[in-house]
Image (cartoon, rainbow, N blue to C red; front, side, top):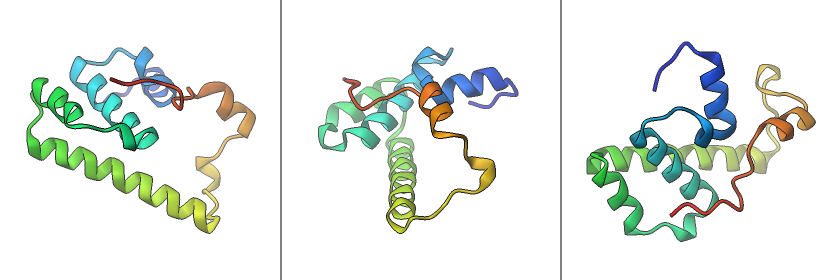
Length: 108
């Protein structure tokens, strides 16, 4: 999804479930969140759901690799105490107020 709409981009960033996404984009975001937050709960059914929406095996593999890579690189940065660039940071209070906490979210 590509857009010049900053409000839509912010909505996706903080809670994609409230954004005006296609069923395919919604499912891909669900997949990414589940793989990030609850990887132990992933099953073949997660892949089947994407396939039923028209994703190819190659597209699903690429999605898993991209999600996994970003999770990996963030874990490495956190583990090494790497500081973010100033343009990438906001106060913790602002961030917590704006973002959605997906830790208790159940994604089928």
